[in-house]
Length: 589
Image 1 (spheres, rainbow, N blue to C red):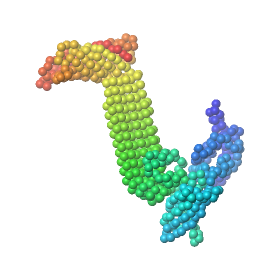
Image 2 (spheres, helix red, strand yellow):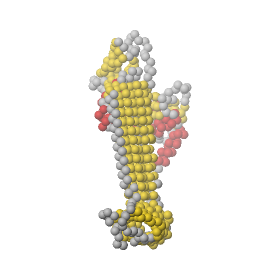
Image 3 (cartoon, rainbow, N blue to C red):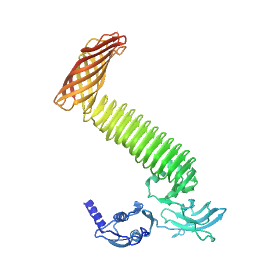
């Protein structure tokens, strides 16, 4: 009922909202005029979404600071978008316009600046005091930066600061930023200056990203990202500057100072390590790279890379790579890779690869893990896909929580549904047609225990298990005659040519090793064709011909019977091929 009402209201809203562009090309989004009249109660969320869709821009805001589900104050309105926001939200919010965005920022307080500037030998020194306009008290930990040079600093506990940097001209724009305060820009120039320098640096607005806080709160983030850089990110928020080059010794000691964490560079050189907003080119570090947002092209670090956004291109670390969003390209970690989003490309880890969502191709020395492995996993020990997997190849085990195409391992494979084949000593699945192993536990398959006798007087006790098409064979054999090697162990595989019918037809390849467990070993390989007939649900009799090949120890008697095809005796042993018949009974379960 509620959903139907919401759909009705949403549809009605789209019919009633009229967007009227009354100005020319240069009109801003906040100045655009709108009018609406709605007979139904509309929420602030519905109104913002409709305005955004109708005018080809986005609202950017912290959802926890807005009452999005509250009803609008008025049922009808005619005026600009800016005045509508002011009417609905009040003057405690700041409204900014950037290409493609209207930014709604909670800023009930305002900043004021008292400053003096001194220019000597092309060096500018600005000393000042930042106050709260309402209370006239100093504001601590506020950010002050020049958008041209990206020189920046923070106020002390009483609101005082000193900013010193080289500049070719003496007129500067100082921007003040602080959480819950309105951004304020001041023009400072001596009396001899009549024109301020034009700002020519490129800036970007990138909507808020929760992964930045996660990165800074991580163990490595807490260890290497300083308190002042964290405050800088909180104060300046989603505004980033572009720079062709930056160089750092450690985070905070760089060519851009503390503003480095708000700078997106083309080339970044971190002698020990650095903390930047992002890279669109090449970044190299002696020990570590930490990036608040995206990295594109090439990133290389001696020990670790920590990326709060996505990595596109090549990422290499001597020990550890951590990406909080997606990887598109090649990621190589000497020990460990961790991606919290998707990997579209190749991930190579010396020991472990971990992907929280989907991974294309993973190669690891020990362990691969992904929510969904879309193509291929190769691991020295184990592969794990919590939902689905393509092709898993591992030295010990493969596990897929739901479906998998193919699994090959040295010991065990496990999945819910197998679309292709499983190959391993032990295979476990709910649904599988082609499970090839000595022990197969397939819910929709077949398991049986059989007792049979062949033409050479070997009595066989065999356990057969597998899927609907293929199965494995494991058993023991005992020869009823007095021979040197009466006890044998056999293993093989079979194919259900006519499965799940009253009349069945199976073909098998089995290898039998008979021994006295001291010095004599005889080997027999058999191809068998078994027609069978099932009585009820749990009993089947079978009998059929076989083609056999024997390799017997020299100096001993021939332990085989049947119809001779070819026999040759040498000093190395007896080689014989012969036909035979095997028959017995099976208990199905």
